Image (cartoon, rainbow, N blue to C red; front, side):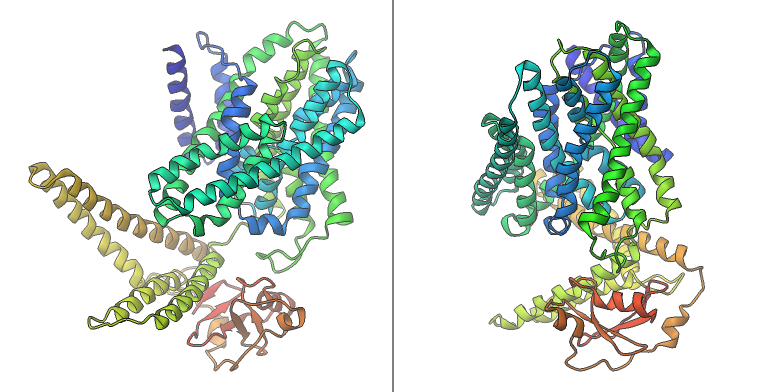
Length: 621
């Protein structure tokens, strides 16, 4: 009963604090840690000890899997060099650097113990980084790199920690360290790929979304445990399985299965991510009580903790700038149309928050290790310090350095363009189908597809204060659905229709209403972005100066032809007539042309499309 009450109180506390953080517009991780620290000192609150096995086997697999299945494998691969340098190279550098600092400052500490605490504090946390980064709206490329780094760096850190613990127990040879890394990485990849193949085969034969979702709940734990049982990296196994299954989900799963899995994992991640930060804060009282028995004065202990925190931050900042200019050579960013400036690198270095894996790994250090209680406090100090110092200043830093957030208007244009391309493929397939159509089904299909595409384009409407047809439809249909639901509930109360039938009808109304809600929320985001960019009643002078023209027939992107790359759709500059590929294409030559020339307006060069786009004001016509 006591355990049940603690779990219920933990879940309720997570929901209450996250709701408060939304109202205060404060990142939830920071508020949860503060709440946890405060609650831990309340008399009568039971001690909640963070067992490393609970974190590594209970919390880490689902958290990693939830992030992996939602991470773009294409974006991950595009940034693989940076991700690997951070998740392997930076972790090893941090282990060595922190080990030297702690060994020099903490008297009587062995080199093995010093490197062990270096491995503990080395990996930034996927949960902390993603939670704070997405809250403040960092550019997608930075988020992708941070997520990719934090998915893999736990493996490097845990292998390093395992090696240091073996050294504490009686020595370890250099060849054993290399073999351990190879076995952990290679075994983890092997288990991950095998897990993907098995689950992919099963999903090809599954049609029940409930069974499919149940299968997905088992996958991360199975991959982690199997890998760890053969002394491979469970972290890498879960990440590889999640990345591959997430990438192949549109082919392997039904639409219902994908929707159900997406919502379930969003809910699981939401609860576990926030519970993790509350648990971190709850460790404060016990850690401080244990350090009170140390022979070292508090000032010395505080100095060691601060020095370790400073070393962790300094090593990361140095690493990201050295590797950027010596090894990485960044490619153009899709959202910028140019190579990311040094400010991106600075934010990438500053966003190195630590989390629950660091604290859990600290408890893996044997209790008989010299200064064990101080090592635990160092880990807690680095977690709390990076979250508060970097987490609270990151939004201010991003604004001061003028780091752009993803633009809803640009996203809406890309979404509308992509839907247009998908519709062309769909209509081509429709033309190839042989069927009798006495009821005008083809016309109805074309009409509905066009209405969907029109709704996407209308979200980019430049007419301020006027309700677009799709917005009017959403408002009217929502009112109708409310009346329909009320009538269905009246009939349900009368008991004249079977409850299963009533539930099916209510579910149909819910699906339709949820689609309307999603469209309405997207329209509001785009509208707000447009209002911030241009005052009410203003007109885009550039769009007025450049009317629609007849675009070049049989147009090609000359730059793509020269480079040997492929385009998705073509755009024509209305200033000079240059034809370039769209932003959905790999090289994005139309946007590059704007950045190079400043020519403000382009027109779609695709057949049967006559819309224009202003790069300066981000509006369409």
